[in-house]
Length: 193
Image (cartoon, rainbow, N blue to C red; front, side, top):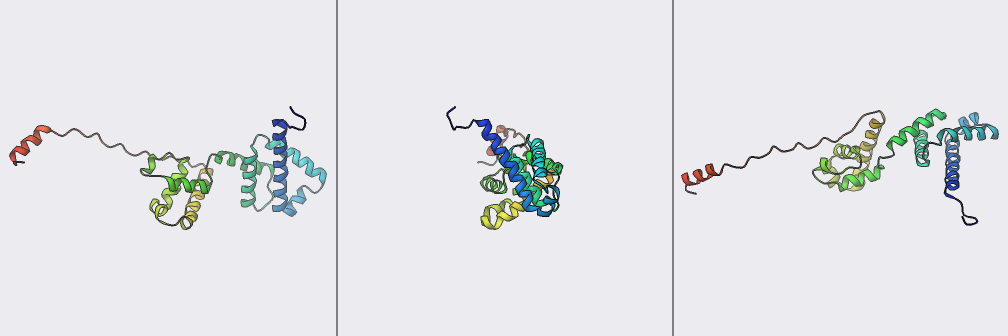
């Protein structure tokens, strides 16, 4: 290793520490008085950061950031460590989901038969279906995006509550039997065709 060059592990640790500091900064700004009631002194703040960092270390930085944003947008009171862990679990589950914008673009690029399209997640299909395929194709992107986003986010809410989504497969058409050639020949002869 060259002098002044950091190894990958120390960079990862620094990023994780920054993520925990960022989490606490967001909580401080969002829940100002409640935050100071819990972490009123530097000693309490440092001990709190250690405790939270130790309990959140199994989650990726992106998951922690997404969970903190979700908590801040949905919870009026200062969250406990347990609330953050639950939000991280939910965020981890939904980490495979595309963003609203990505899902919208995917729905616009889809083609018929839509059930056969290789969707990144079934929710994208159902959000497109609920919005209306013709609306997605005909209305302006700006106009229809908010409808799509509302539908997509409501479906994510259902997913978080445990609903399973799977796209039903198209029914395979019945096998067609070959036409009776003798019958056609006799009909042609009968009608002089």
